[in-house]
Amino acid sequence: MDIETDALIIGAGPCGLFQVFELGLLGIRSHVIDSMPRVGGQCSELYPDKPIYDIPAIPVCSGQELIDNLMAQIKPFEPEFHLGEEVQVVEQRDDGRFHVVTADGTSFNAGTVFVAGGVGSFQPRRMRIEGIEAFEDTQLHYRVRDPKAFYDRHVVVLGGGDSALDWTLELCGKAASMTLVHRRDEFRGMPASVEKMRALCEAGRMRFIQGRAEGFTAHEGQLTGLKLRLPDEREMTVSLQSLLVFWGLAPKLGPIAEWGLDINRKTINVDTEKFQTNIPGIFAIGDVNYYPGKKKLILSGFHEAALAAFAAKEHLSPGKKVHLQYTTTSPLMHERLGVKESA
Image (tube, rainbow, N blue to C red; front, side):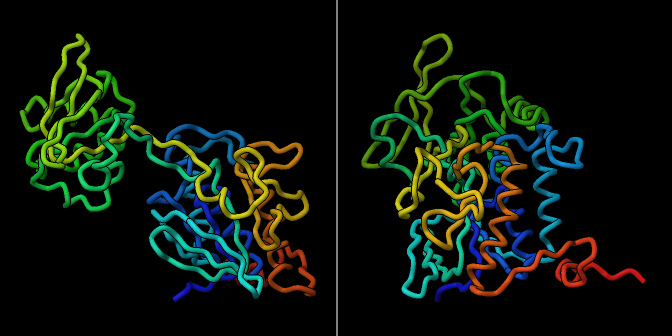
């Protein structure tokens, strides 16, 4: 069964979340899809702790604080999130609405579509070792969907960021053995996590190896080991049953390029009145869009979301005038926001 919605937002970064708010003020409820397993986009994945100084009326906030505040702001509108799913198909139906399907098979019947995918969907940086892709999703993993799948197995984790450290700590003691491999003895992850990892190594509960992956061993179709090059140029092979790789994320336009939109390099051309694409009813906001004078700022994306919401209301209710109402004085806005009128 298709999920019916008047607005489907692709991307749960700051612009996608603010799009929920602007649509909500106009009485339009939203469903939100993101390929990442949590909301926040680049703010949460790339700079959750870094300060942002150019959000109006907020002198400074971290990337994660901005996302947390946006989530609080949209709470009255009760959006439904579909996380960890990538949109594969966007097709216009005979009635002008849109048939949208994710890679997981979730299907939507949407009145309008908003592409707020930033610089594209974030994909894991994959290993460039010939032949190792044959083990992907069986023994080689770039995401953890079911932690219990790694219990009682000999696990090797590659990476030096928060994801690598978090899963190393989470699975240590549950896996049959745990080995963390990183090319340097310095880590990008939280210092507290690094301290815990080193303490576990000293206690003999896991091991850390400084080196880089250069190859693998296999037997009867099964991945059995990872070949490493150590800092002194010696070679070493680590036995394993499961390999988890956390080398960060790379943005890719991905399936968006197949939807019939007017693509300008890795962005989508829009107008500056509605921020609508070449397909009526599909809008693009934030870093993924392009128009003359475009500036890739969160502030710009917020402005685009506001105008796109009004255009979407007109698209969904053709011939009806959309009145501008202010949240400071409008009883209707207060009702939608759940604000009690003062005596």
